[in-house]
Image (tube, rainbow, N blue to C red; front, top):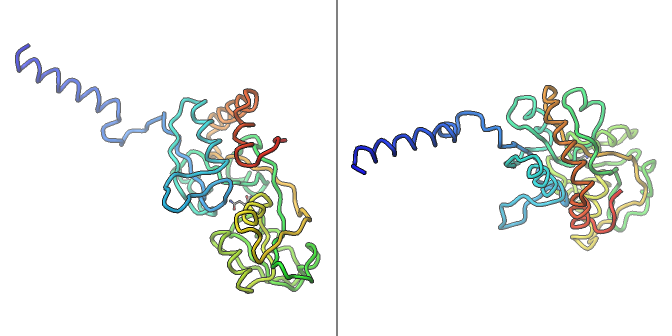
Length: 255
Ligand code: GLN
């Protein structure tokens, strides 16, 4: 082969590969599923110190769903109250972030079928005697994460001062520093926090305030993706993969 032919072949290859990769990533790559979470919600989505990889139940689930759908999952970290705006702006395809399916959000996004059953509980300081349930929060100070169902529930309490924080770890810090009397947040995340900190200084009340279902959110006009996610979720439930992921993070059988 002479040099000219080689050069021609080479430039041909370059053109083909540029076309395939979308000329440096400008063109839309349908294989990539752009996912976002608010990585501050262990055991659903979090990062460990010194390890950039997103971990948690939601993270394993969306990666398994992506694999089932033949899509490369690309995960980014967006504050919880910025997830729905990011979907609406078309910056991401899916939000998975321990997000409760509710009517208010259904007005803005489409949800997948429920993939996890959750609910809210109250965390107080270990030496707290006066708060035994939701009704005792009247006239008290409560911390919650901004834009969450916990924050909404707190806002219903009479004469209660609600302090909203960007992330749930700040709520627990405020509780320990006695800036608030209680934290309202999702039960599995509260339980995980108590386990990780050996319940040091705080305790969770047994009363469950709500029953909530988590769903993955997609853009209103993306019914196709909603259906694909539902089909893949069903597949993972049928083939035992969902169960494996559930047991890894929560032990025991899923509902
Ligand atoms: N499940 C709650 C909600 O949807 C909290 C979610 C979260 O903080 N990641 O509002």
